[in-house]
Length: 611
Image (cartoon, rainbow, N blue to C red; front, side, top):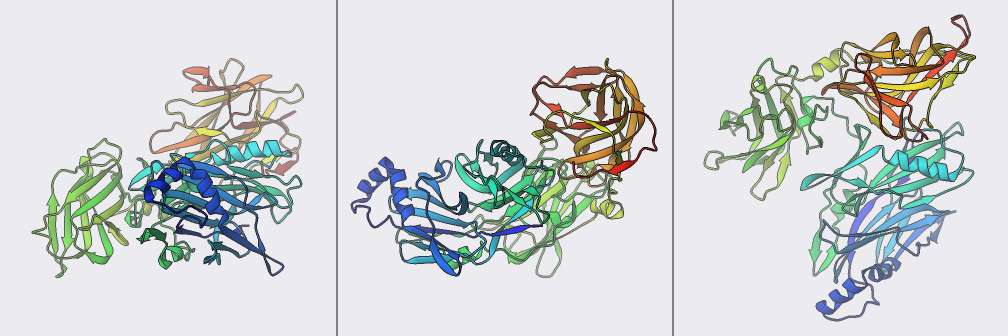
């Protein structure tokens, strides 16, 4: 189930409000510096928002104070504010104002309403939202909403930390989540909504608006939803745990005329939702098309990878939508860079011509890099639409992955490929075999569950060269472990490794009682969730430990969730062969264990429902 909210953003800049005193530029600048927020409050009052109720327009009330204030650093604005129109506490629209100087003020409007909402700027410019721009989606692996507003607010803050936002503004930036929501609203019966707005900022400048909201689903049960809208013109990306789940391509063009900032029609249209695109396949050549979207070094499926790491030389052929006479070629290498050995282009006669050969500018072992290859203008005298890269893959160990290839024109603008082919792709393995769904495991109806914390994840860890362990004290009435659950996700290659992971049952002294093995393939990539592991009725002492061990390394592993809502930690790190030590912080691994009174396997069982 998804809930659509209407969200469109426009950028407009107006002259100061009519009541601003006239005067010289120098005088106005001093006034703006002295009272920037007063100026913006007056400007905000000139924007009128209207909602339709029973077919009639109703003017909305603007909150008296901004929900956020910020400086323009590292942007070119001086100061900024964000204002909200609300109904029953819930925001229906946001207005961002930035003072670029005394004669220019930038407006950005974001509608968060299911009905059409209209704005009038300074009594003369009108804008009405028409199409949905924000979609609220159920948040996977989220806890059941708590029964008090204080606990729900704590849950929302924790859930917001699961998202990571990135921005491309000349360079790649990781945006910071403000530690507290900028606005929250509560409905005690949760019939309407119960939620909060979070800002992901560059410096203090908000770029991404995150909304987390409790609503009732079709069955009437309250669950958590999430959604995002842009509050900036840059390229924006949001990851949920390790997966990219929201993208805003940005690119709104700005035009200044007679000192007044205006948004051309194309800028408004660019913010309207387009038809859904078919997602790129993991590690396929098409991952090298478009602008860069792999924001960190590593074996990440949003880049192209060859079938094998070092077996033979590889090539990547890229096609561009329009002919370009490039000054340089920029190759974005995101994993094991340094293998680029040769570049060719295709002329008007379709003949391949070598334009560069040599040592890759990105050094092996550097993690990731942008190899900028200048082109001899005396040699490349014609526009091109195709570029071919040759990689000496055996010379640089591991998969040599490429995220994007840009052609830089005479103005310095980068043009991105629209089509790609390659000598091979790791996705060939992906097509042959995919991870099977986790097997269904049933828990005996009379089983007693032991766990620590509130089952709400506050983070996750993968321990290279080590493992996890957590202590439990069983009741006297039960002594056989029948089931273990772990809150986990797999990372690395799409194809799971052909191996098992271990779950050790340890005694009070952390000595092994039983070594249980499970296939890596049962743990799926993506967001963490609960996995249920069948245990063949193992008798344990009153104090015992459950110790998962995943043998992780750079290209494969399993994240185990952790919960900080504990008074004291019961958790350890280590391996049976080396011993265990306390984690040293107040958190517990997210592991549940189920016990029964005896080993009679004929006891009635119940399916494992939602945790």
